[in-house]
Image 1 (cartoon, rainbow, N blue to C red):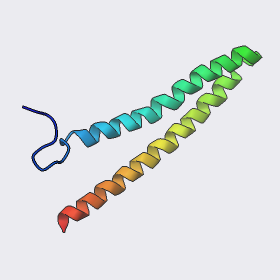
Image 2 (cartoon, rainbow, N blue to C red):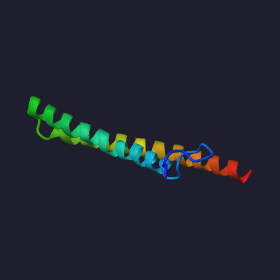
Image 3 (cartoon, rainbow, N blue to C red):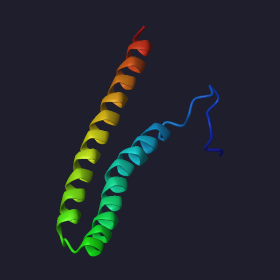
Image 4 (tube, rainbow, N blue to C red):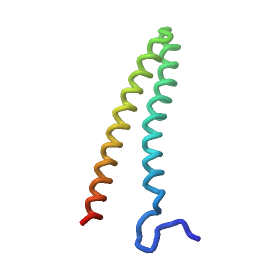
Length: 88
């Protein structure tokens, strides 16, 4: 059986959840991984061990938190809008 779009042209039921999972995971992993490598490199370059690492990791945490909240609120609004259309 084919797992693509169903007969009505809609995406499979699991696809929106996986897309949201990927976006939110990216908000967690992306900034933190970048901060870890950049912080280590800057600490080695300027001999400030561990200050750049700590500050950049803290900043990455704030960026990740902001991105997760923003994407979550967008998704909640989309679901509410979709739900209200189905009720009509």
